Length: 189
Image (cartoon, rainbow, N blue to C red):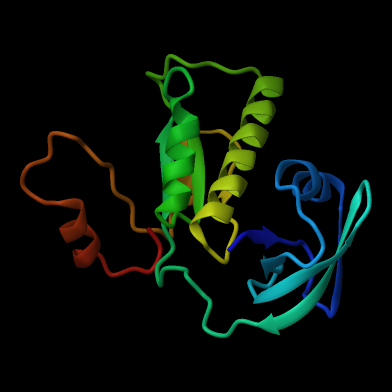
């Protein structure tokens, strides 16, 4: 079933406007009587039916709350990724969200080839956030992960001191990532 996130609390009557309404109307081609899964800002989940559509508004009626709909992991995983060349970051963001990451932090390290000015950094962050928002709708999660602002490796180390931290290395052959997670005593990774 199609999933829609709203930035307000669920109520009996829900009005969708702006970009979400345009997406529903023109990309998803919604019509009255269609049923959606709605997730509100508090991660409450419900089913709602389309009551009416105008050129820029979609009216929904709450049908029922869905209990035990929380699909989130019991741990919080933050994926910090140094900026790769090309559009690889888009794929990384999409898959990290689909796999359950709570957030994605793009990182600039000393050896990064990719360099963005401040305007480009903001534009990239917004683009990646849009990709994360689309991925979360497709995989049935109840929390929208965030794509953080691009930071330096030094800033990353300062900002996440209360997290268990791992650096993944493709040639590691002694301990698997699963074993590392199991041996750590934390709920934040």
